[in-house]
Each structure stands twice: as C-alpha cells, then as structure tokens.
Length: 243
View 1: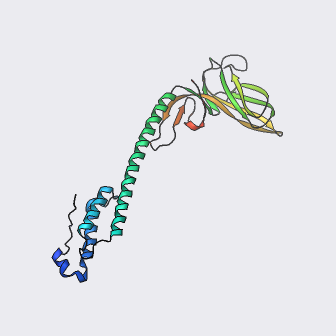
View 2: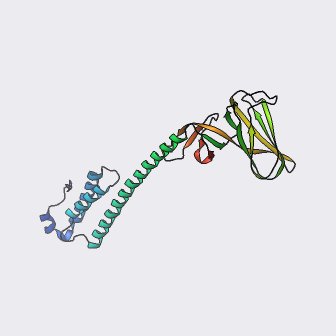
View 3: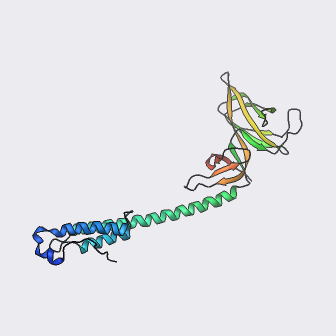
C-alpha cells in the first residue's frame, strides 16, 4: 500500500534542474513528516505504519543522492525488530488470558473448602471439634490458648502444657469452661506463653471456610474471602487447603 505525499514538494523535473541545491532532501523530510501524521494519527508507531513510512521515504528520496544502502538495511532491521516485538506482545497477551482462565478455574475449586490461615479469629461450628495450631519460637514450659466470644467474654482457656519449638496443635471441642456447648459464631483465639520471664503472644493458625474468591484484573494474586474474617486473605498466606 502506498502513501500519498500531501506536501507541495518540487516535481522530479525541478529536482533534476536544481540538483545542486539538493532541495529534494527537504521534500523527503517534509513528506516523511506528513506521512507519519497520516499513517499514525500521532499515535504509537506500529509495523504497518512503519512500512508505509519506509515506502514513502523511498518514493521521496533524491534520485541524484539516493538513500545509503547501510541506512536502508538498518531501517529494514528496525522493521524486523518492530514486527518481532508486536508478535511478542500478542503472545504475552495470550499467556495473560490463559493465566486468568486458570485463576478462575482455581478460584471455583476453592469456594466452600476449608483452609488453615494465620489468624486470631474464625467462625466456629461448635457442634464439632475444631483444630488449630500455635507457632512456638523456642521450648517453653507452658502455652495457653484463651478463647473469647464476639463480645470479648472468655469462653474457655486451653492449657497446652510445655511445648518444643515448632508448630503445636490444640483442639477445642466447642464447650465452655462449665462443660456446656457454646453457641456457633465468631471466636477469637489468643495464644500466650512466658519467654525469658516475660509474657509473649504467639501466632495462631485457624481453620476457615472460603466463602468466595476475588480475582485480580491486573494479574495479581487470588484473594480469599473467609467466613468470620472481615478482610480477605491472599492465597499465598494459606498454610493448608482441606476438604
């Protein structure tokens, strides 16, 4: 496809008659500028527009002082590079689309499943036992887990006894200190111990059910919306995925 030169440059006869003045060079530059605006509309230069400009430049070159071969080869190399970048962008966009589809499939499989995440609060079905864990930084003589309800009232305290460094599991059977069943709902678990004579809080990992999943539109990480938690949790923060 050729591009019409909209400039009022000299004719070929004028160029030949005034070759010593080399006015054709000015015409070539003006024609190239006009073709650039016409082909690109002042937007990013694509491979098709680049090719149009290259043809226009060849059409408007001075026949008595044609374009140098090395410059022409360099422009062809630029065109090849531009075409390669365009193909690469297409491939990357395709990969991005496949990644989003994979995320959607992964998200659908997580909804309704139980996961273990770092949290101090979770929704508990007290009709059955619940298992959580505590991260112990070093060997300690005693670890206690205090369970409080949504109103801040202490429901029960679990004495885990002495523990070695690592993850230590605890089980709550859903009962209060007096042995009666606690009502289902949100509960807070606070693990504490004594290290070097000073009280210290420990990190707890609790089970939670995935209510929904938020998929990032910019290629970010999946965010899990969990029952009993007000803020979503990133998938990378999940310790275990259960049934």
